Length: 217
Image (cartoon, rainbow, N blue to C red; front, side, top):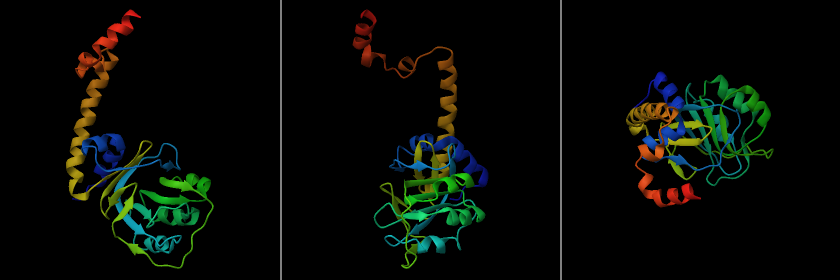
């Protein structure tokens, strides 16, 4: 089920941690990820690209089919620190309206990409360039951070990491994430008034002996 633009904005605002929890702690693309634009966050449907080893021909091809609001997902059969993306390709993606780019490989021209402001997450930064010779595949499932990502699945990217939500669960997870954020807002106010999570979550009996020991120390 497709999400509307305003729903994607909300998904990005809710963030990867809230969405991960709302999805039943599923869909985490294991990092670490390098976020090239500090403070950036994004959400959108995946446009998947499977490149041949050491080659980014299909990244160039993807620019011809990339749609506004999509997250361009660049992968290799086996991740390696070869730069699938540089400033010129990032400029094309930005002009095409990409919401973000996720690279399960390296990028180069990191400072220039950061200056563009297009949100980019990558596994590595390296000057090692790719070939442009061998065709790969567009629109096929790719494996990123140990998770299979299909075209049209939704990605949420921010400073905590990257989470994938299957397209068919998108609205369900969004509603659960919204409800979770509302509960957390209410808890935040209670904590500001001095209440403790150890009591609100009923955790005190689990550590009561240690608390007595610490209080008497």
